[in-house]
Image (cartoon, rainbow, N blue to C red; front, side):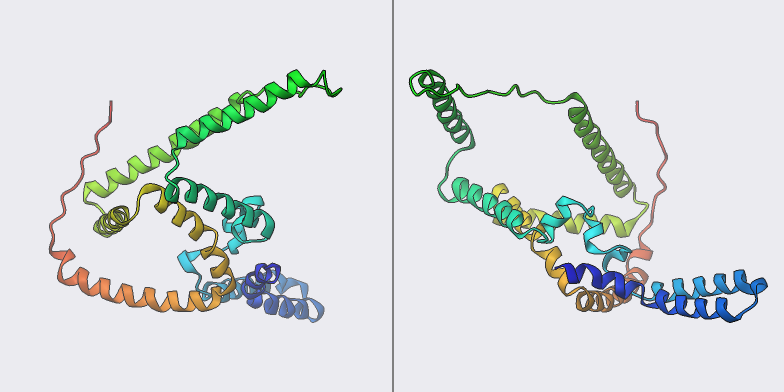
Length: 258
């Protein structure tokens, strides 16, 4: 997987490496008065070459950087196979436990607490008989900054969702309105076929498999996506000319919410 992480950067910098060679040649033999003009021309040429490379969803970074470039990205892209396998294994065990065996969450939590408290209690009382030190029970407390950070992040996301719903309902962007309606319709179909836990498990597994497969075959996927996007734009232009352009649009009057 480490090879695939560098393939994107090599592919993206192909035009820039060629430009760098030309730049070195100019610096070795050209005059210093025209260096700045040549650099600007070469940079513009490099950016033009880079702009011609199509990437899915218009991304400009490698897949690893899109996922943050840290430990979570390593887990999603199977950089650490043991950790990723353990995460998927744990999710699978939870899904089997609650979905196939029909175990209940509250029952499971209570049973785990009963077992843990019983073991710690017995260990604490038997430590004097077996000549071992009693267990050290740590004090657990949620840090205030972590709780406030999570609450702030949730607040930002919820406000963004409300703003998106307001824009969609305003009638300003018909394309976005149709996209949201289609997305909700697809989710409703999936919700009727699977329960919430199964749907969450499917999304979890896809999140840990689709990105790594895309990173492996990103050139082929991007080429196919470019053709599909061009065809979609063509069909949407026809649909917009025949149907959407004839629908009257009412302006939205901005109102301050109390």
